[in-house]
Length: 338
Image 1: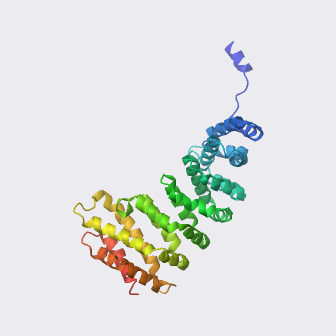
Image 2: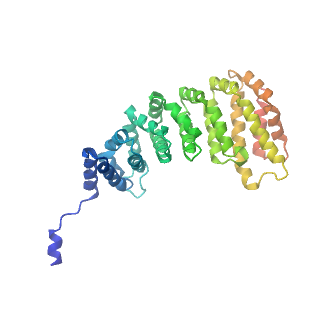
Image 3: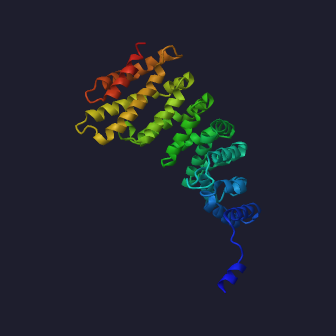
């Protein structure tokens, strides 16, 4: 009896059929609630079947950012689904590096897609900002040059990215990593980012994170971004000098030495990260002192007048300074005599 009933039961839909059905509903639904329900359904398949979800629903998911962007709940679900497509389960039968390239191509071939993500950075909603940044980062990893072009073309694209540095929440670290990624090779982006008051903003983040001694990986990220903006870029180096960058560096180095000389000293657990941060800052200083580079002499005078030269000497001969820091301090100081 049970076998007869079982044979008469409707065939169970497989994952592909369900994904296609949900994609069709997302495309044709006129009510926001129905579109959101379809997106929730696609999200449940995104980790395990990224290629199927992308094939059937990617364009409709992206379109939802433009059409339903004012609804935070829907936007959040769309962004989560898109991020899952970039980061499928390792056990997924559809997992492939090609999927990330395919997704990135779909975003970067239409300027309005990247612009829609950048628009989300204007919101104060935490998840909208964080997920949008993570998504742009994933796209940039797959297609760095195209992402740079889209950011440059988007209205206030660079301004919106740099403004993330004012966010006191976790989004600031994602913003730092993204800015570092897109400024590695683009001199134009380096200049635009710098002129969005990036130097002051980066120093503010360093201070908020606990400066060199108490700051963690976020401070390292700040120094990496500074290095990108200043390496072989005389225009940005000049802007750095004009906006008081040398004095800010001097203040940070003084703080490091004072904390080391205090009665409590620096805890052993904090010293290792402090040295990484200090090494990073010394490396940034050396970028200004390349022999034969434009502006090197002016840079030398700026560091001298701000007191950085003497502070580096102090670090180089300080009894508690590690060998690594002494070597970097010596290299920095020797640049003045080249």
